[in-house]
Length: 346
Image 1 (cartoon, rainbow, N blue to C red):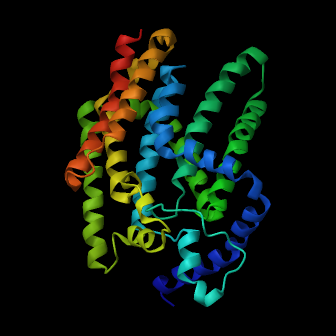
Image 2: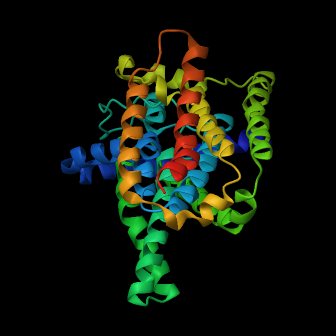
Image 3: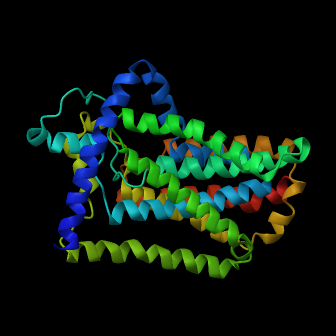
C-alpha cells in the first residue's frame, strides 16, 4: 500500500476517534459558551502579536526579544505546515461526510469560518510559546525572591501555562474549529521550537542584519516553490479556502485576515521586522535598562496606531496592495518594538 493511500485512511480513523470528544465538550460546556468565545477571541494569534506581546514586553526588553523572535519563527513555520499538508477542521469533516456517517448530537450552528487548515492549531502554537516564555521569565524572577528550586519553578511554569491552554483547547473543540490532536500537536511544536531556540539564542542574536534579511528573503521563496509544486502534483493550493466557502454558514463573516496567503504575508512581515532589528545581542544585554514608565505609554500608542491601521486595511484596492500593506504593517510593528523603543525608552 502506498504512503499516499495510508495517510488519508490514518487521518480518517483519527477523526472518527476524536470527533466524539468534540461532541462531549459541546454537551458538557454548553453553559460556558460565552467564556469560550471570549477565550478564542482574545487569545487569537493576531491579538497576541498585536496587543498582548507588546504589553507584556514592557516589563523587560529581554523578555520582548525572546517572545518576538520565538513567536515570529514559530508562526511562520505553522503557516507553512498548514498550507503544505492541510487537514480538515471538524466542522468541514462533519458536513463533508454527514451522508456517510449520519452524525447526530452536534451543534453545527456556530459560525465557524476559518479559512486555514486545521493542523497544527495556530492558537495553540502562538499561545503556548507566548505563555511559556512569559511564565518562565516570571518564575525566574519570583524564584530568586522565594528561593524556589529548579523543579518547583518547572512544575509551576507548566501548571500556569496548562490551565489557560486547556481552556483554549476546549474552546477550539467546542466550536468545531479543531480536533484534539491538532491542538496538542500545536503545543508540542511550540515547546520543541522554544527549547531549540533557547539553545541557540546567542547565535540568533549575533546574526548580522544582512544575514538575517537574506534568510527571510530566502524563506520567502519557499511558498512560491511550494505553490508550483502543489500544482504539479495536482494538489489544490487553495483547498482550505474552498472548504471554508463551501461550509461556512455565513460567507460574509469570513475574514480576509484569516486567509492562508494573508497569514503568510503577516508572518513574513513580522519576521522581516525582527531581521531588520539584527544584531540584537547588545540591546538584549542592555534589556535591564528598560524604563517601563516611558515604554508603557509608547507601547499603548503603538498598539492603538497598529489597530487603526488594521481596521483601515485596503481590502478593495486589489490583492497585492492588500498583502503588501499587511506585510509592511507587521514589519513596522516588530521593528519599532525591537529597534526604536530601546533607543527612546531608556
